Length: 317
Ligand code: AKB
Image 1 (cartoon, rainbow, N blue to C red):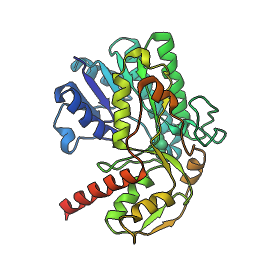
Image 2 (image 1 turned 180 degrees about the horizontal axis):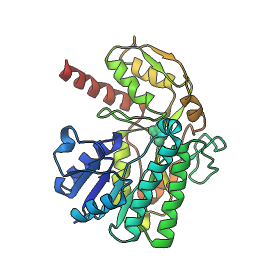
Image 3 (image 1 turned 30 degrees about the vertical axis):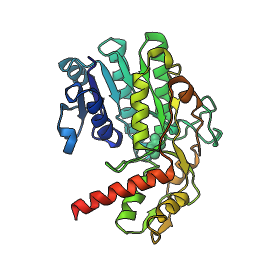
């Protein structure tokens, strides 16, 4: 039986992935870990307070629970890392090296580590961005993800480490808030809509970015970890696509339910980050190699987000 450790389990992806993995593989087989204490459902299962940059502590948790697989979700995202470049680089790379080394030393046998559309840069073709193309990221986060991809592939080639990865676009879910990303506006906007509050967007109205509903991201993550080894032909990271939209298009999609919902635009430093990223992604390799296919488009996601956030708001009131 596989025993799973999740690093960064209290974050936006971690909190949903932990519950999905516990449902699929049994609560006792999924150990969540984070620097912060767990809240809600996350606390109902094995949990360790863990700093993923502390290799001795990480190894001790791996040995204590006889861990075989690690999902490494610790990262400082794009906007926050621009404000803390050295810390962002150090957190993103040190924690990745520790996990890769644990696999190289055969303490664990499989790793999931997410990359991001942030690996692309201003000279990357912005439409239908291919899997293999020019990559010149100009953010600390993007540089760390691109370097991480190179190292994952290197550890696979040289040390036969079974590391698997997808390039997450902006992720949108109603259960938790993201923190420190450039695509975060697309989560905040739904919260404002159900609260009948106006929304001030930090990106300009026509800034189109690749995005994905959380359920699709969780499926991609679990699916790539389940397929037989030989199906995973790309060991840097796979492009995956869900949908692409601009703040204006998202606003219009919300207005189908909340016609009076208002938005204003005040681009800040995150605009330059968004401008350096693709608008849409070609995910042909993921579809062909391991059967990736998303289920949510913009309007289906909008309905799901609004319905669930409304229910949560009613519970609080
Ligand atoms: C961010 O905005 O930094 C992240 C990402 C695209 O990886 N959501």
